[in-house]
Length: 441
Image 1 (spheres, one colour):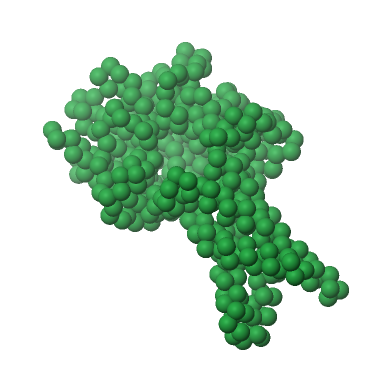
Image 2 (cartoon, rainbow, N blue to C red):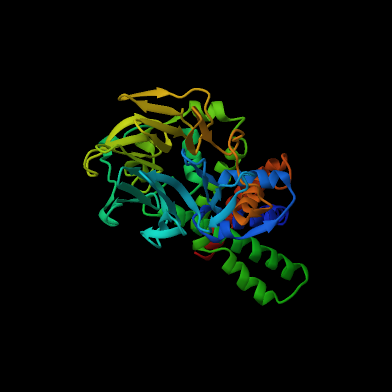
């Protein structure tokens, strides 16, 4: 028992600050739809941090008649029309897509659907709704709220025709998944249960970790300085209880998956070669009702993209698998549908056939037809003119701290060390709690 106590104390003192940092940043990153993460910015001259801002790019629109450019980013909307090609910010709402309908341009944002008018961007529909995807065909728009609800909007009448959930039959969701996908789903709070429960469990675990790190250091300080033994005993009881024990399972999951993600490049071949049978997958893989990453409409057929692939319907009620592979983004250019994959090949759907898109950026955000060329918007885009930032968002800073790139390329090993210590802490802490309970009984 004494040895276990010493191991627990040493692990806590060695990794407590690191774990506190990972817990706080991870908590905010799990809620990447919070607007202040993108509207809160900090001046910097760090080129590496400024380059990371391109990960927030979402959509790119060029007016074919005037070459007027509009860029959608989670930072907001940027426009350029002058000869010097200088972008100016025209809307301070996190924006997920820019789509055109005949002569009009629309944007899906964290505050509903906006329309570009002669006086600027004006709220058009679904104010207050966080729209994660948008598709437009002629005068019909399909907007997705929080990857869950699909709205069909008549753009002429500015009228919501339908609001529905995408409920896919279990028989259409029987596929296995790769270990690489499962690890990411678990770590990002979308790998266990639907209705936001997975994310809630992640939040619960990270908040418990913040509490444990803070209280653990305080208990050590009280004992070391022989301050109020009575207070120390109360805090120790509060530090180890059934609620903390419940969080231990999820803390171990976060630790193990975090180590895998730290080395995702080196382990890519291994993780993509291991299949997780559907029969042992958590309940969320039997519904995926909050997993609409992309949407499309060609006037007859509706399509949504989720982590399993593309599903189609002609009535928004009955959905059938159309193509396997995570459909991260779907971008329509007349009769051609471009599909950006996440951990899956990029594809083109044309003439009722899916074909692989070779030599295209992984997880591209948009497709732009310009001067007879097809260009792809991604975080590494070189051929497209982009805004030049002088500040970075809070989100970018938190992500850089969490993945270690804020400090150094070798910091992932420090994160691994912290994750390993967390496993030690949960196991030794659980054992100490169990022995105390057993002694009392």
